[in-house]
Image (tube, rainbow, N blue to C red; front, side, top):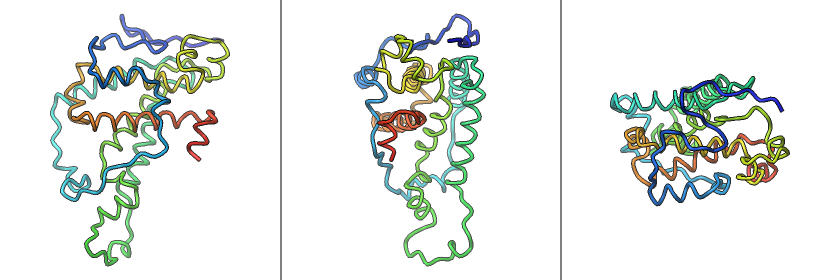
Length: 244
């Protein structure tokens, strides 16, 4: 099977679930637990989103959010590192990932800021604000910026290190990466593992604190990312049953 090699990234290489070269050698107990699991083992049928909180409603406060230059710089560097982890494939490349990411952003913009008709706006709502209505009708996505970011992040990373061939071919060739993931969702699980190791590097500490500052939020972010990326494996029979 012919595969395109990765673009040169200096002294750093990415392959077969190998950790990013800059990854810190120390992990918390929680992160060690994550590393001991296969992403597929963490897929759940239902993800509960936070209840509506009028005091911290995202649609009202978006203009008031102040993000430091440090966080912006770390996010920019993270995106650059993710781009470098893509192989130079004809299709499963960073251009494809960018297109998927832009599509997700567009989809979210239609969900988060839909065009409400005049009749809907003037409906008697009692104590229910428009924000609450949007929260309810979008299953909480509208008022949960972490879920929105997780969707965009998942789109960006979903084909990291893709070798340009289907999972069935990877399993047929009996490659180490196929054995590691027991022949299921091989490319998808590899992408999640590599992306998570990158995201957990010390140099992105400020970004992590801004996005998911507590262990609980980080667990929820990981759960959202894993379920989103695993959903891109449309050929796995068990995942298809779970989705249905």
